[in-house]
Length: 286
Ligand SMILES: NC(=O)c1ccc[n+]([C@@H]2O[C@H](COP(=O)([O-])OP(=O)(O)OC[C@H]3O[C@@H](n4cnc5c(N)ncnc54)[C@H](OP(=O)(O)O)[C@@H]3O)[C@@H](O)[C@H]2O)c1
Image (spheres, rainbow, N blue to C red):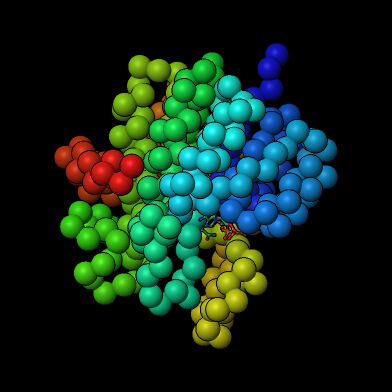
């Protein structure tokens, strides 16, 4: 039997790395998509060592850049004809950022990395996903959205060019858009064996050293928050379940929490007219 192939973005740290180890332990060929060669190579070694699986690959990809995504996809296609699992885990969420940053294609980087990049990557890998007996696309959102039940995607100004910039607002807007994208794509692919589900990540321990620009106050806030956080390994169990469990091979368009339970997203995000509008906006970037 052919080994399954999985691409997970942001596989060099946190939940992404923990999931990559779990999937490699199951004998899946894992490709970690990372933007930094040094961090990616270090993670590659660690994942191979810890999973005892040598079939792990590094793919350099900057999810904020469409040019980088296209280049990485060409590289992946030259080695793999089939992609069984695609996990959109990478995210830009540096909460110390005070002013917007823009990608090579001049798109605000949180919107570009967390929403536009995953949509483009899936589009470009659709042939490989449909070659799988049962392809799975997994998007990643955030439980923090529950604190913003009335949040909408700003169709006029999704990149905060006119509005006052808030990294928190742009982050949650991108995560809301990913939930809506999940519903849209699952509907679009409903006649195919490819399923699309989203994960509602809860409060998970992060490596604070990854954010050297955090103020002392924010560091304190994170240290309090981390007392209530679960480990990346525990959260990664939902990733592994959605990526590999036979129990859910026909389940699509669902939103799962850290207990692998199906949960509801906001009313706004479930509305078909809203989903259509957000995806029209999204496709305009691609
Ligand atoms: N931790 C939480 O409490 C929490 C809560 C809700 C949702 N989430 C979501 O869970 C997912 C994983 O987060 P985590 O906690 O594991 O955080 P993390 O350790 O900071 O991991 C984020 C990963 O994304 C990568 N990344 C960022 N920008 C990228 C880009 N432009 N191109 C490619 N890779 C990029 C990072 O790579 P670098 O090493 O190069 O920066 C890193 O590997 C994210 O989608 C996050 O939004 C986390």
